[in-house]
Structures are given as structure tokens and as C-alpha cells.
Amino acid sequence: MSLIRSMLVELTGTSEYTDGIGDDVDLAASGIDSGDLVRLVLLIEQRTGVEVTAEDMEKLATIGDYERFVEERSAALQSGGA
Image (cartoon, rainbow, N blue to C red; front, top):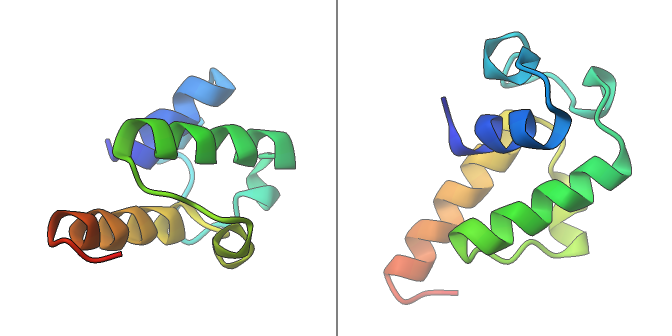
């Protein structure tokens, strides 16, 4: 299970995010509210060191979006980029 999926399971207390929701499904359409998204971003920042700005959040809608974002930013951090 991906990091984002495991965080969503932790936040929501439901296992539907393990494999019941596709990578391209809008999280808002799957029942995630703005408060859950803020908590997700806080978990991402705490566990990965990747900063997610409000501007970034506006562009992130799906599990796949969050996974790619974290992967790209993590790689940039490891290579010394921003």
C-alpha cells in the first residue's frame, strides 16, 4: 500500500482507501472533506519532510496526484533541490 493510501486509512479509519478507490478518483468525490485534506497534508509534511503549500493543494485532487507530488518533492530534497 502506498504512503498516501496508508495515511488516508489512518485518517478516515476505513480500509476503502487501500484498494477501493482508484488513483485517479477525486478525493472530494470519495468523501474526503477539507479538514481531512489538511490533516493529510500535515501527515505528509511530518512523515516525509515535503512541504505542501496552499497553492500546491489547489493542484492536488487525487491519490495519484499526491503520490506523484510527494515522490517528485522527495527526490528533489534528496538531490539537494527545492
